[in-house]
Image (cartoon, rainbow, N blue to C red; front, side, top):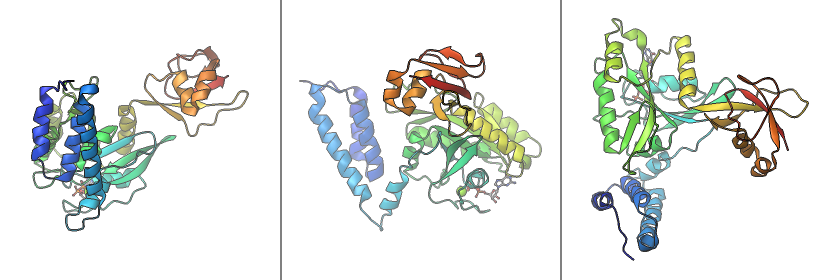
Length: 331
Ligand SMILES: Nc1nc2c(ncn2[C@@H]2O[C@H](COP(=O)(O)OP(=O)(O)OP(=O)(O)O)[C@@H](O)[C@H]2O)c(=O)[nH]1
Ligand SMILES: [Mg+2]
């Protein structure tokens, strides 16, 4: 049976064959597998590719101090924790680590010279009743790009691009990052409403952080940032301004497009801790499924307290929930 491969496949295959860096090769192999049509005619090709992927993974997991491969391989992936994973990226010295230090329990290296962060580091940020994971990363610039960054960014739920308003070169720094990531087929977007036509690409929702806002005395750099990146949500921050950090947290939560739903037992008071996290538009059924698949199946109806509902309103499984709704399941 013919394989009927799309033209993009052959293009990508050429790239894959030419690539020498095992980590990039792994990424390209995964992209090849993703765009390969899945039918009988490609069974053998799929098996070959899966074999190559597993060999590449093994190579990356084998300690190789000389090339520093092992370290980089483990940096490829950070397990998600909490209600969402947010990756902070930016030019050197822009203040990524300082933000992580101010907002999370992590203790990153902060220095007044650039290129201080050498590896990604995750910390947890408390936002009201939820925990959100923030990841600090090494800088991206003409002089530095860690190849594992593409995988880390692809996996994250949200990108925060940190702009250094204390620097004359802040626009150029950001533009280079857009260009560099586009080369890795990652497109940073204000909103992601559709999938890319080309499946090798990945669209990532991005918030721009106009950091060190008080160092932009004339406001000129902030103004230019708004003009250059029109459409993006730009949030002004400074580590010496707690209100700006509070607002930044709100914007991160909003950008994650998630809602918190609290559950209560019949006849008991609600405890506003440990909410169920659902995507915006999440339903009663989805909330029940988080508790247990069986629970969702057995569900007869639910009662809801929250905005736009009267207290204890009886609803069915397809009822769409709002942030901070309280729900009581009846099975
Ligand atoms: N004025 C001012 N300085 C800041 C602010 N945030 C961070 N800095 C300073 O900026 C410098 C760089 O901060 P880092 O947090 O190390 O920057 P980074 O982006 O992690 O740098 P790399 O790891 O090299 O990419 C340090 O001297 C910080 O004290 C801010 O809001 N205002
Ligand atoms: Mg840093």
